[in-house]
Length: 324
Image 1 (cartoon, rainbow, N blue to C red):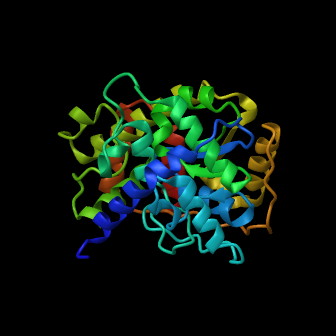
Image 2 (spheres, rainbow, N blue to C red; image 1 turned 120 degrees about the vertical axis):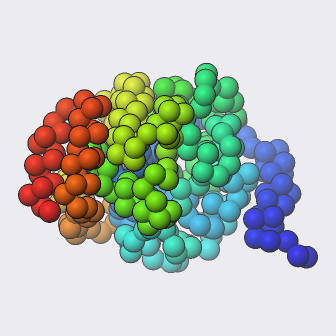
Image 3 (cartoon, rainbow, N blue to C red; image 1 turned 90 degrees about the vertical axis):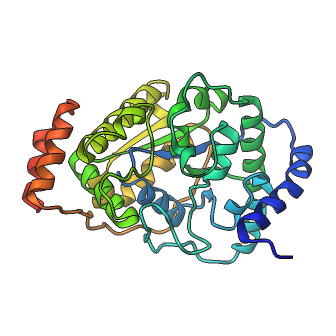
């Protein structure tokens, strides 16, 4: 047929979309959904992988991610193909991207479609103004996906950072997992991401807050510090709308030291929202990653972060210096 991979998938999605939408039913929110978020490079992928490997929660793998306009169809297909397969537990990723077909996927095209943002890298940009998302349709899509799975679904939901208030109003059983990491460690990891993906420190990577419009012209250290600061503020503003019993906060170091405790806390939060996920095995502790840079680079990042008034930065910097 001569179609490249992207054109083939777009054509397939167009063929399936209306058929799936016509089959949607107006359902109650029977199963909670779990949304993992945090600033980029904070440990969100590891948190997602732990929940996928050590609970029976439904999730989006690389197969189901190919059906962003027919997500219930894609989820049913992937669940059928993986029915007798062992849960993936490699814990490997390349700056948030996993490789194996059965590993969890970020599902960016799905989020871009439902939240009205451009496809591709720009889908991670903060919307320029008031949201015009069709939340009734969003609810129908997600509840029908949960109905197909027959249990809660976990998502890595960077795109929902700007929409948390609306999300929890639309789906009140939502559970939010917030992964936190010390700003200087995040900054060093973001810098490594820029260097390895693009070969340039000034090349932006990952989420773009609205302040990107002026940050993009600044020194790399200011760009990164501003990115962390403004995304952190957006998250803080969003989680104010999440009930305490529905919010699971975990530090990256604690996530690595006690992953089994983290999984248990999420299962308890889901149960508190009327759902159930069974725990599978017990994960062992991880050695935290540490992306080390030279002293001048660390100094530049630390000074840039200080200009954005991060509380506890000196303590965080001292902890990283001790590990370096």
